[in-house]
Length: 491
Ligand code: NAD
Image 1 (cartoon, rainbow, N blue to C red):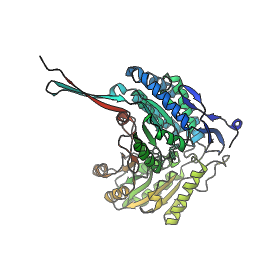
Image 2: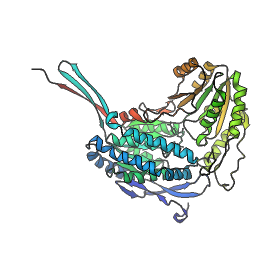
Image 3: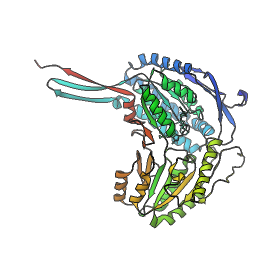
Image 4: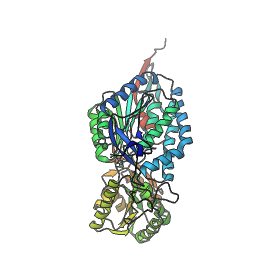
């Protein structure tokens, strides 16, 4: 454990009822992945801390949900402005605790801000439906009502964006909201709440509790929480889904991924190679939307392998804050080792490692968690590296006889978060759209990331629940629909 004085950012604080507080129990160091140094200490919130946040959230809800909707979105307009003004500082802090590049950090903040903007449209998004003369002399109206206190538990990999898939919509619909961010990247959340503190929300409407498994369990077991949004790995997502549902809560739980990109012979191969490499390696591969298996039509397989190799050779591994870096550090030394083990597994399984990034060194950053890009060719769909989520800068290339076989290979995956197709054929694009078993699909784009005004969510083992993050889906998650029936017989 580091002493407080050595730490750049001190101990990370909770934000409860408009006050900054300290979590009850000591927790763990927050490290800078590019240097391996501790930069802060994050505490673990106790059952009592969670109870305090829920109680204050319930108190705040009483007044907040009665406010006119137009008033409820004013703090969101202010928050958007504050996020715009502070995005460079926020992005710098995000890089320091996460390891990705500054450009990637700015990119994720942009997607987060988009959600704040979309939630400002809640007066329209909250509208349900109205039918006149639904029955003789009867009109029927559906109304979306907030329910109380909601919580979200979020992962380390997009600390500036994922909380905003939920927070703006939860509060704009009239609920109170508690965020439990990842203990690996809690500083971005603290900065975000510093801006929230200034945005003008009433005390208790938006709150922050740090912590780990016990804190999450306290959230799942608290009777005062109406629903839980979760984003993280599949085993945890499944447990959260089961436990929250067993405790009578609404739950949406997004899990891990193993995304495929398919390249057909009619594709613009250079463009496809550039986008495939970008998708696999962005954020060091620590993305639920990383396409890290490329299934390529045999007739263009060799050409594509060469283009990928050229593209990968252009990558620069380094500190995410240094200009020119395209691949930053992995989140922790443990995770780096886990990814290295997968590379070793790939070699053992017989795939050919055509680009080996294991020997990378970053001068002046000997304590950092760096791994250069690793590319395998002749991967087969039964190999571990083709089936399991690696979450690192590792790309596997597989040949297939054509689009149908490529889709079959892809659909064998247990996961179904996202998929991309590169093609010049409308018929192939249509086949892909009809048959691909993933929640987010892209044609001639490397990453299938929907804008904030569309929902975001996967299928199969990538998602547990029904209503997804963002846009109208999450508005429905945060509201209950009441139907009013009125009869006024004509005289
Ligand atoms: P993680 O599952 O380890 O942790 C996510 C959150 O759950 C954290 O806040 C953590 O404190 C908490 N947690 C961890 N273990 C827990 C347990 N046993 N019980 C209760 N809570 C627990 O995930 P991570 O490593 O932070 O994030 C990476 C994972 O998230 C990857 O699998 C990635 O694919 C996934 N992810 C999915 C999406 C999506 O939209 N589907 C988006 C981003 C990340």
